[in-house]
Image (cartoon, rainbow, N blue to C red; front, side, top):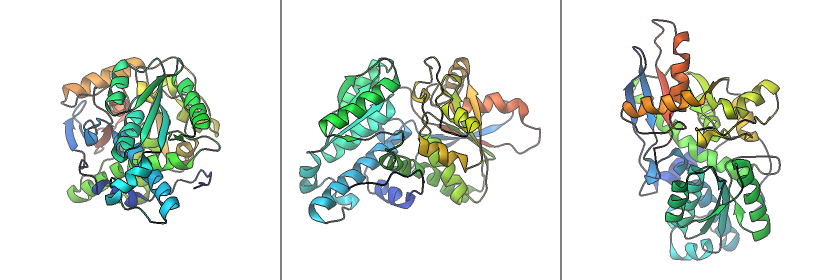
Length: 349
């Protein structure tokens, strides 16, 4: 099925929510109240055990895999595939002929591998040399073939594109570029579930955040969250997109008015160390009235240590929102009712 190449992001988030409710390993991730810096408390959405994969990306690629298998099934049979049918034997016979290929800095690859394994398909994940061996081992445990491709993430992206072109596999990236936008939108559509879980929780408890800090690599999570918050949260917070100084491609794009690379050294915020923005995510963020904050390597490490001490073990990538909160705290006026929300996007593994 040929998909249009457009930059619009108009997710069917209810479809994504229905899919995950049908999955036995789905549960709403915890919303915790932490004692933050100074006298302020912090809402923390804890994604560190999401669906057994330990990161928010468990909501992205597995959902996209399901939609792609559904497309293949519809083309073959004319039947619209329900989530409950996804693992039936006749569907798996079709799925096992499919291979999903991507590049990854870690967590996206785990999502692709887990999604493929669920339906009986194959996966092949390209990793740069900078990705730790532990992630490669976790990918293999999910049944993926792991290929080391290049010195940096951009190299592995290029290798995955060539792989898909030459092998006939399906490229399942979380970034977008001209000519490739639709499948990554489905990845982002899955991330919308996080914002909807939060909306339900805040509607119930009445304690809405005043500021939401959203870490970004290519920008998929940040854009999905920002879109949903502006779409249907009844109390609107300030939105702050957080990037490493070494890879602030979304901030650079905002300042330039066009999607722009931001080259720099390797960052210890490895899952955020993306030099090229998703063009879909960037455009979505541009209409969501967001501001930007960048973190040094020291900021990222300090944030991970602080959040871990507060009881949620994580990494500099996972704690980046908390790092930006700490950096901005001196600007917060006393008595302002400041109540921030951060996404702890991954566990330490």
